[in-house]
Image (cartoon, protein in one colour):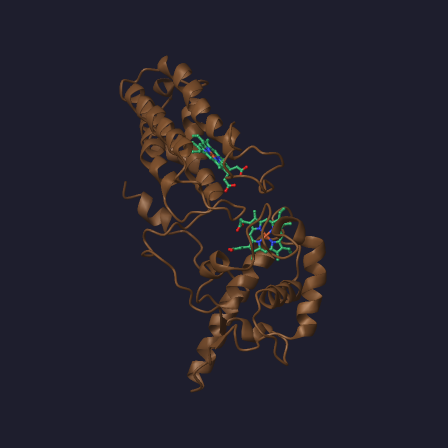
Length: 314
Ligand code: HEC
Ligand code: HEC
């Protein structure tokens, strides 16, 4: 198991490019004896002209998902309390990075740095932050921060991801490990040497925890993480709160945890045949909830009515 530790540290901690440069800049100023002055987005940090350019881009490339008034449709709102608490005390550089590197959701990486900065200026304008004389420059981005918002709960209990991210992080890989049992008997796995480069987690991981161990783990993951679907304060991708208080939602979560337990028992018994039935049940546990709360037309990231309770009487 010692092998796991150095590998997990291989993550790239410093993205090259903008973020790195801005740290270097702050460092240089400190060395020169001038403490970098931190400014708030409330202090007129962009110009009206810049926001105007951002607005033109916004209408064409963003409004469909974030709403003409930034109220949110299939994407989350870009104004208001929940938006401001997401960005509480964060430098604008992070915000521009988020736009430039991940938006538009369906075409990331297509915006230039200056377009992304203009868009940030327009978001500030729409959020009623006052304009100033000067444009927001690349050099200023790291030193301008969003105001500190009143965020409830400790940072440990606050959810980090939206629901879709949580699903892709846990439910998706682990259920696929279990679904795979239908196709391949874990007990029949031949002993393999660790996979060589290029690094492939699934291949390499299956040499560290081979055969049934991987199924044991996937079942534990599904069961024990089901309650994360009930964490208060989490939002769906479209900005709506996850309906954690709805009785039907709680019931779907409970059913998921129950199938996880069933999978765990069968896996511990190394009962290959049981997994035909378990795969069915697991598929139903995912699909029953998705039918009501997820699959409401559109492709990934496009469901404006996701996470909305079914109309009364349904
Ligand atoms: C196809 C739909 C779609 C389009 C088009 C789109 N977005 Fe998004 N946006 C999303 C979704 C979904 C999320 C939530 C997931 C995420 O944060 O990556 C999001 C998240 C964001 C966030 C983070 C919000 C927060 O509170 O953390 C920002 C900022 C943003 N978008 C800006 C933009 C801008 C600016 C454009 C136009 C250039 C744009 N988006 C275009 C769907 C879209
Ligand atoms: C209690 C309800 C519920 C259960 C149970 C559930 N999901 Fe989800 N899932 C959702 C909702 C709602 C979304 C949309 C989240 C969003 O848009 O932020 C979602 C999104 C997803 C996504 C992201 C895809 C996309 O289109 O955005 C994947 C992948 C996923 N679920 C897989 C699974 C799997 C696999 C299971 C079963 C092991 C499962 N889910 C169980 C409610 C559920």
